[in-house]
Length: 339
Ligand code: NAD
Ligand code: TYD
Image 1 (cartoon, helix red, strand yellow):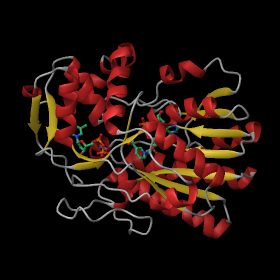
Image 2 (spheres, protein in one colour):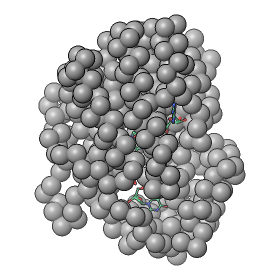
Image 3 (cartoon, protein in one colour):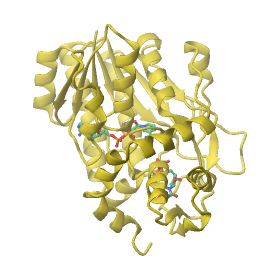
Image 4 (cartoon, helix red, strand yellow):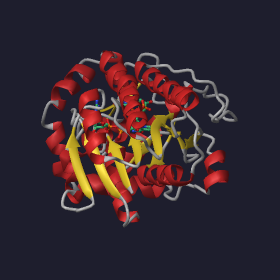
């Protein structure tokens, strides 16, 4: 069984590759990644010598390269993680989000149609549902919640989902889609909330909280997400959408305070900055379907997961220091200076 994983040099794709090689002796993994600013070969260093693993640098939106890869590699399953993934960058420059997230998805599915596939899995996000109000804790996203995207990022992911469903209906492509809540864990790029706060706190730098810090996200440890995708590609029903979430809703400010506490840093580092444009208030997933159909439940509690994550950043300083000492500095200045 050969699984083609796109975007495997990124956060969740990288964790998925580590997970699959650990869990399945009989699976070969081919990683295809463009190595954008978010792709990092250091994330794949632990598996580079594994004979079951192979890496090819390519852009999923480059039809010729992707078709050549399918012709020579003949994957059985495709899991498409590759994406531009950061909301703030999508507000700054939406174009590349449309190219990679929508057109890249089309190219991947066209290759699947041309060369044949057992399963095409689209890694989507709960952000396609828009947001929920803070004063309605009884409301959750189900698979039947209408698509209602807020940012150029979520609009591009929602567009891709519609295209995946169209390829199922029109061409009988054997697809599945998963929509997961916010992930955290090792190898998370330090432009996102949790790793950014850990890195800044360790460097005694201000911790920039958008608006009042009251926005709520439903945090899931990345390995729980990987296990859910493993179940869906092997046992999920073709044509179906599965929501994935940990019933772990937390306000941003509480996360940042928890990180300060774990690292023994003062809360006086917290700095409230201008809010994100169009900032979604609350995400909350109802994971009943994946639980009932596939028996999935999250295994890592947030209190344990955040400790493991912080420990990983302490043990792997070189991984994130290499990032924040590079091109990231210009991004950080653009995004935060004088904000
Ligand atoms: P990431 O930004 O850490 O990694 C993205 C990876 O995709 C990088 O390795 C990058 O080099 C690669 N990539 C980007 N453009 C490419 C292209 N055109 N061709 C080939 N490779 C390309 O992202 P992530 O956080 O790991 O997210 C992975 C997927 O999961 C995305 O589809 C995202 O929408 C989805 N998702 C993320 C979260 C989250 O909390 N991070 C939650 C739900 C869903
Ligand atoms: P992020 O990690 O970018 O994920 P997403 O926007 O896709 O949910 O942000 C998580 C939350 O943290 C979101 O409400 C925005 C907020 N945030 C900050 O307050 N400060 C920051 O520096 C960042 C990066 C995010």
